[in-house]
Amino acid sequence: MSRFRSEFEVPPHTKVRVVATADRKLCEEMQLIHMQEAERAKAEDRTEPDWSNTGEMLPRKGVRNYRANLQSPKKQ
Image (cartoon, rainbow, N blue to C red):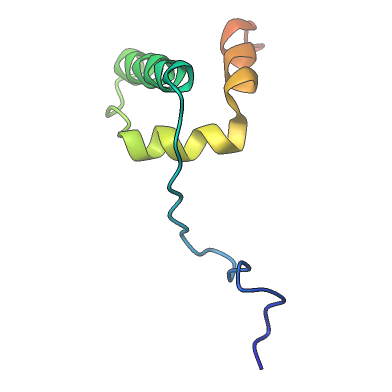
């Protein structure tokens, strides 16, 4: 008997591959965000993030949340 409740449940710390279809507007937003992340990395003298990092970040943060954080001034 499996310790998981459904076939869709996965153990913690498991990488899951997500395949999805995105419309043009979302693709353009993702490309813009990736370019902004690359510029930020260059300004901070870091290596440029690859697309998988950007793709992984967006479901966690969300596009709207990301844009709001980017536009609001950071307190230091």
